[in-house]
Each structure stands twice: as C-alpha cells, then as structure tokens.
Length: 185
Length: 112
Image (tube, rainbow over all chains, first blue to last red; front, side):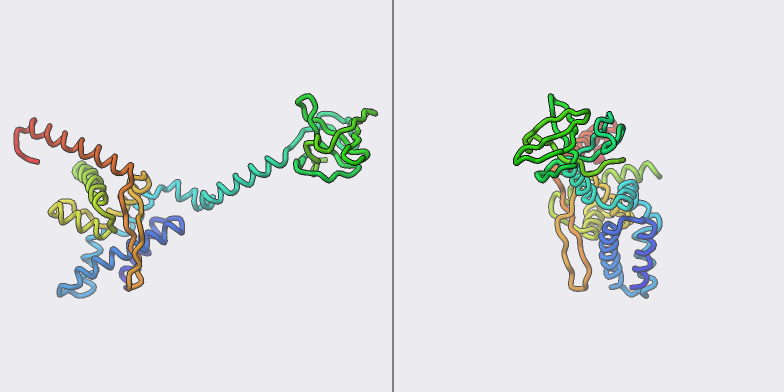
C-alpha cells in the first residue's frame, strides 16, 4: 500500500539507522500499520479516510523517526555505521593479539651489526621460526634481556652467531626467540 | 501537559513489562492490550510504543523472543521480558503500591 510505504520511508529517512536495524524496524512498523489499517478498514470509510486515521493514531513520521533514532542510540548507530559491527572489531583485535603473540618489534640501540643493522632502527621479529640460514638476524634472550645477532654458520642444531666487534657465541636453535623479518632501514 | 505525559510514559513502561512478563507479544498486540486493560487511558500514539520498546531492549529489560512469518509475507517480531526486566518490574510495582498508599493517606480519598 503506497500510503504505508510512503509513511515508512519518511520514518526511516528520519531515523537514519544502521542497515540491519533499519530492516527490522521497518518490518515491525509495516506489520503494525497494516494491522491498524485492516482493523479500521472494516468500517464504512474510504481508504484515504482510513489512512488519515491510521496516521493520526501512529503519529508524525518524522518525529517518530527521530524518537526511534534516539531510542536506538545515535552514537551506537554512528559507531555501527562508521566502524562496521562489533564482531569485526572483536575479530580485528583477535587477529592483532594473535599477531603480537607471534611477532614483536625491537629497537636497535647501537651499531654493533652495522651496516646490516643500523643504530636507531626498528625491527620486526617473527617468533615461530625453525629454519635459519647464514645472514639472518635473530633475537635471543640472555639474562632476561633480548639481544640480536647475525647468523654466521649453522652446525646441526647449533647456530654460530656474531654480535659484532668479533664477539661470537654458539646457541642451540631452540634458544632463539625469533628471526628478524622486517627492518626499518 | 508535559509532566502528565512523562508520568504516563513511566506507567506505560511498567505496564509493558507487566504484559511481557505474562507472555511474549508483538507491537500491535501490546498497544491494543494496553489500551484495552487501561480502558484507553494508556492509548498513546501507537508509534511511540516502538521507541519505548527499543529503549527497554537497549537496557536489557526486554528482548526479542521469536519471529512469526505470516502468510501475507509480513514478519512479526515478538518480545519477552528478561531477568533484569523482571527485577525492574518487581521494583516498580513495589514503588507504585507505596506511592498509591501514601497518596491515599495524604489525600484522604479512596482513589487508586
């Protein structure tokens, strides 16, 4: 029925809801308006007269839209529209958390491994790595502190690492925290 | 009169919770039942029922229970009361009976 659809369009334009909410509200109001229309249409009135009564009973479309928008929460609607749904946020945060449980950023304080690794650069290290090759930069923990070194040689399960300035150490593969996969310069 | 309308809105909110505590209902059913039981005193513009329902739903006092698919292609959404809604209803009823009793005592009439 055109009059009902026109009325609904005015309400929904005024309410300006998130798509999913909008569909639900529109469907609910449509059912209610048809119910009132049918109940009044049983008497001896023209369709226009019936619609006028329905509109009067239901209230001004624009005002109703604004009231619905307020009840649904204008800020919430804004958030839903702007930042997609909360499910996407949860998923996004989950992905970030998983990523940072597997990777970490490190700040390089000195130029021990220059020019391979410059002073004041930031590196991203990946945790779950078992495959190393000479030339890789790895991160390991020593006395509670993260340290970085260059893989010089691989000898079975052991890695020969260079810390620069002729300092070399040998570490088991499983003692390595991770491998640098990205560096800023 | 704004104060009367605000007062009525408060009463209608409690009445809606009462109706939904009895059985799940859809919008039109709530509006007609409310008007019938209150002898048309609570027959606001029917559209204004929805902002109230959405506001109660946002406060977790009511929730949608199920959707009925009608033969004419329309969908009908039923609401029901939540546990917090029940608690709020009981609280409101208690306040209401206290107010009625107090007003009767003060006014010295048998109204209410």
